[in-house]
Image (cartoon, rainbow, N blue to C red; front, top):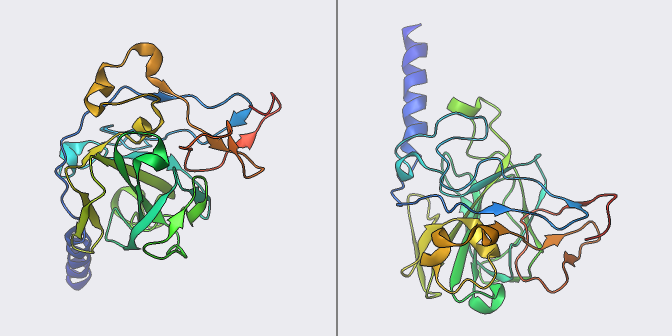
Length: 252
């Protein structure tokens, strides 16, 4: 009995040791999302800077002072994940607890139509993506599949929580370094962690202006990939990270 308890404690300590501390200073942006008419898209289950998870439980305090460093979408295992914009694969692999299998993309200003570089990270993938570092992907291209890697144990139980955690860093340069316990942390030069919904704010020239936007600009309208595999509205450079189903109310 004592041996079993000791082994359980050692196992818990090992999992804890796999979690890297994160100390980004973040605040909520107040942004929301509205999808094109005629499309039903997976909603956000836990928004950026939320103190709670999808199930209402409180987040651990040693990561970004207890605030969510990205947005979550609750997805079935194997759901295709899409590039939010054209970009380059800069890192992929398997991290530790709360991370799982991950993918990093770098998006230049020409890729997003914004004046800054964006570094996007996809976490908890089901399998390692069949991509190579240095490979280019187009907006809306499938870059991986959703899973629950890195989520099993503690809060989510033995089966984990299948979902996509998407985080984005915004900066003035495409330069970056990679470090971390698992080589899974990309640091864009002078880049900062902020809300992925900023990607979809049209005409934003200054990141510092996000939290002062007028109410009518706080509702972002991303492009979506329909069941036909095309981006709607046509020509949109940034898209929702999973495809959307067409409804009976038109094609958008």
